Every structure is written in C-alpha cells, then in structure tokens.
Image (cartoon, rainbow, N blue to C red; front, side, top):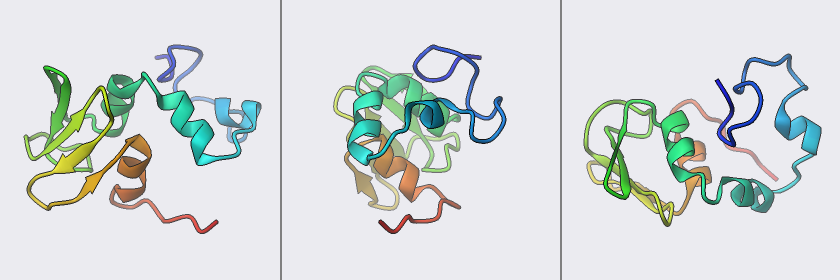
Length: 107
C-alpha cells in the first residue's frame, strides 16, 4: 500500500531510518504541515482508521480512531473537534500529538 502521498511503500514497511522523512530530512513542523496540505482524507484514514468520509468531514469515535460519530474533521481546513470530550485542534499534527500513547516532544 502506498504512503499518504501515494508514493512508495507504506510507513512501517521499510527498515528504521529508511523512511521518506529520513530521506528528505524534514526539519520542522511547518514542513510536515506543508506535506499534509491537501492530503486531509489520506491523513485521516491513516490516523483515524475507524472513521469514514461524510460530505466534507471525516467522522469517527475518538482520537484513537475508533468507530463512532463523536469526532469530526473538516477535510478542507483540517480543523477538528471531539464533541464528547471537548478536545479540539487545528490540523493533522494536533490530532497526532493528542492521540493516546503518543509522547510529547520537547523542542
């Protein structure tokens, strides 16, 4: 399966240190945000696998990607909200850092 850009093997199928990010030396959150721009549906299907597209939104149960309807992501803007918990964010990076089990990065 291709990665979210539609190129090459999916993440996790290459040996450590040989992924797309390593090859292209991503250095900032801004660069990652630029790569994700226009890829909202692909990012949501990867980050929130239990969800589904509903109009211009991706809908699922929560940030773990469970099935349900509590969390909604606007696929044009990237803005998202979990209406059950009140947690909100502005883009896919916010979704990633708020996922259960993801450790915060101190820069």
